[in-house]
Amino acid sequence: RCFQQFLLGMQNPHTFSKEILHFYFEASSGDMSGVSPEVKQTSKPVLLLWFWPENKRFHLQSCKKFFHIDDCILTDDKTLESKAQGVLVFHRAISEDLSNLPTSRTRFQRWIWFNTDSPTNTQRIPGLQGLFNLTMTHRKDADIQIRWHVTARKSMDKEFVLPTKERLLCWIVDDKRMNKKSGDSYTYFVTLSKHIKVDIYDRTSDDVKGKKYFSVISGCKFYLSFENSIHRDYITETFTGPLAAGTVPIALGPPRRNYENFAPGSSFIHVNDFSDAEALAQFLLRLDKDNEAYMRYFDWWKFYNLRQQFSEEKHEFVHAICQACRYLGLRKEYRYVPDLYKWFLE
Ligand SMILES: *[C@@H]1O[C@H](CO)[C@@H](O)[C@H](O)[C@H]1NC(C)=O
Image (cartoon, rainbow, N blue to C red; front, side):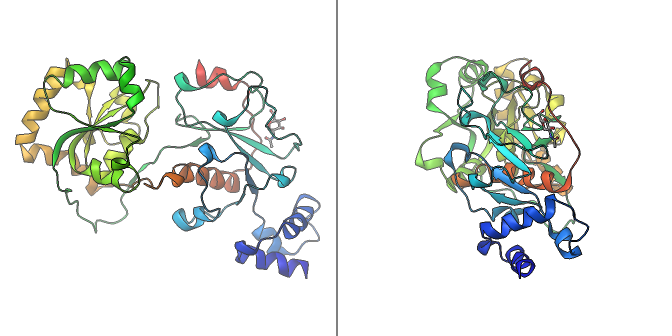
């Protein structure tokens, strides 16, 4: 009866009760020789989401719904702490004295360090080195990368249609960042805006929230994809967003060749391609009048695909978390990160 209930629970995860889960662990962590093959096949690791990042809660079935990722059982039930094979820990939510981390840990459990921030904006909390088995960040050498990826197009069915363009150059930016009046991107922007009009939107305004985020971006010919700090591989949705929306990103961040690890070289403009901001402005104004040259920035659509990230705020982290779910389900090898900060911050 227990097996039947268990299998039922797998088919209909909404009814997945804790009793069934407990039973399942007893069965799977012990000797499997007497266990029926159906159960072995359906044994998926439990991934415990220890903190909801920025308290943005989504439905626990979202990985299956959005990405057909069904390699783990995602839960936020902390009473499963000692049973979970994976624990996903959002760095920014860890308290300085580590008192809000899980306390009972088993040998088989893998802790995943989840950090969406750049090294500049990452707080060095003492005592975290040596705790984690896997890393999930923007870095290319992380175990799990959180970036939305350009993928090869499977079929040539869809032709690229340029969204209607109403504005030349836009930037959605945090008012706070603007008010600081410092940083590479601010200085660059100030000089640039002397030579070309930039439409600025406040990131926190309702005009660019939710679905409007992409409709604003796709209405612009170019977009300032200026990262808030400059680090290898720190290329965020400020770049992938416009790329997916049918807008040409103007990258300010790591060097061009770093961007080319993640996106076709002909899909974007890099500020370092120009001697200064004025030269970039002149180039953009020329491109504005030369439609043929402008359209060449979209040639990559013939061969590649980039899915638009979710516009709903609560879904901001769902893609990353689902990658962790897939990893945990597919990769089993022993691993640990000897010194997190040496790897990430230095
Ligand atoms: C995970 O990392 C911890 C801490 O380094 C280590 O003790 C443990 O054996 C590792 N477990 C796995 C399954 O890799």
